[in-house]
Image 1: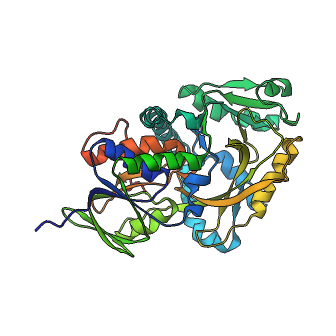
Image 2: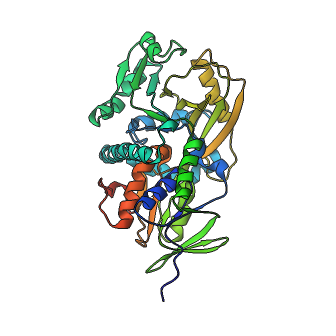
Image 3: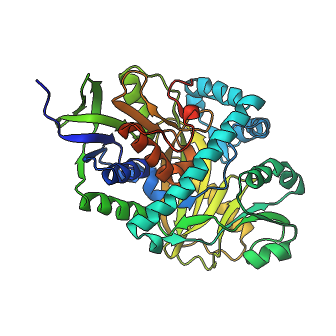
Length: 417
């Protein structure tokens, strides 16, 4: 006798990836449940910098990053920090990261990243039109700033990738030209690249709420619960929760940094770790932000969030259980004050730390489980969850309904490690 099915697809994870997949599946006629941990404070989809970073084609694992890493690791407030108590835990991940920087692997990752970005860029526009969500977007571009000429010259690989994969940009070579795009910056920034097609959401939390309401309005169901395990069967999947069990034809694991445990529970060993990121949101900052700012040498960004300014960035490896170290957020704010002399920082609305689920080659897993084709994975997007959500959703939908995805997805295989 066939088990009673609660839904066609159960999605574990209520972030931007999970909800985008849910909307896409609903569009294809599927009934969808979302199961999510009851902890919105740790949900990186709601508190990030709000950027659709389609220009960020270069995988993080590059020889240049590896050369800079030893200097950063010695600075607890620098762009990259590994907590001493976590060094042995993250070492295997770091070794894979190093291997991913080898030339042939880096080239393969760049091609795959660019392909996913192109799909996601088009998919976002489809999503915005379908949800009537244009009012939640800022289309103001991005200014990528360089303080030192040598660092600007080293960025040639970034701009070469933009050129190759049709991301428009203009290179600026003086403080005066930079000021035409964004005034109020310190004159020490003598080089910059401006990407005019860069997009931001006005507030990532508002974006999530809009998508969530659309999902519910279309018949979607939400369950607030931790998931204890996934049990794939021949004709269905059983999701075990604290509040009982759920039966679905398919299960999608999109639980961000918490996905590794769920995947390993059914036998898939995927080297997911978490990059902890920090931000501070300011009100009454006395700074008119005309475009998204990326301080490329210093590992942080500044964006508008509603009427405030959000300063965010940094990478910290310390696992899921250690409490936040808000000295790192304070360090970002001090840099912002230094680089933007008129910025007023007295009114801090919020300090936050979130978890970016990251794989060593900077590519997500978007694939069937190696154990069962009734379980699919969609996690490991790192800094690019918001950016790649709509594209990931279309790929997962194609995999579930039995269509060929629009792009080659072999690079996102769960078996590649």
